[in-house]
Length: 251
Image 1 (tube, helix red, strand yellow):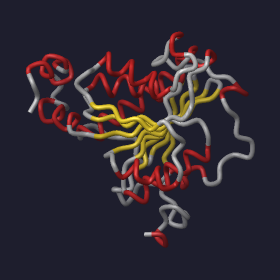
Image 2 (tube, rainbow, N blue to C red; image 1 turned 90 degrees about the horizontal axis):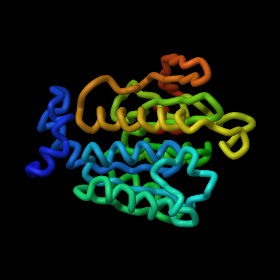
Image 3 (cartoon, rainbow, N blue to C red; image 1 turned 120 degrees about the vertical axis):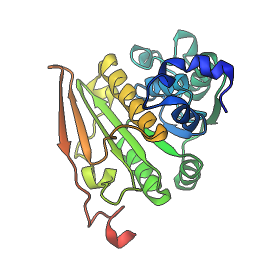
């Protein structure tokens, strides 16, 4: 049940007929893994904690750097040199002491990633490199867990939901294959803070829809964000029956 304190804290979203008491209870009973506590993971974690997701598993092996503060809004100047996980836990605990926070401070290998994914209901990929995204996708396909994937570089962002529980849903590998020939990072190409904030916030929105059971998630659709022109474009994405991760021969 929800306590009187929780009913008051979450009252504005409980008022929504799409959420109501039942949806809020589902959020309270949910467990979410956030991989990466940088530009995408920062707003995503804040909004999921504020919304009352009962248990957040926070994974990041890095420490806060001064260059992070332009966009990674969960951290502050006092966090420089501190583990990103510990910095995030401090901020999230202050924001909502009602939720449980589970730290993953070490880099996740194949086995520990599989265990981390198996322990939750949904995964947010907020990482910044292709190899991690591929590994997270494979773990989610294997465990049958929905994955909310976001990315941003320069002034362009992308967002999609991959849900192996739905037979028509593609996976990350269906869409991106073996990745681009020249993968860039924010430290090389740059990125604007509000753009990653937008993508991370949308990841939190998609997660809440999936967990509380309302709306139409971005399954089979890729949202492209052009921050320079403030334009949003959507592409349809189909499952690849020959995909080496989720294809029929691997089921």
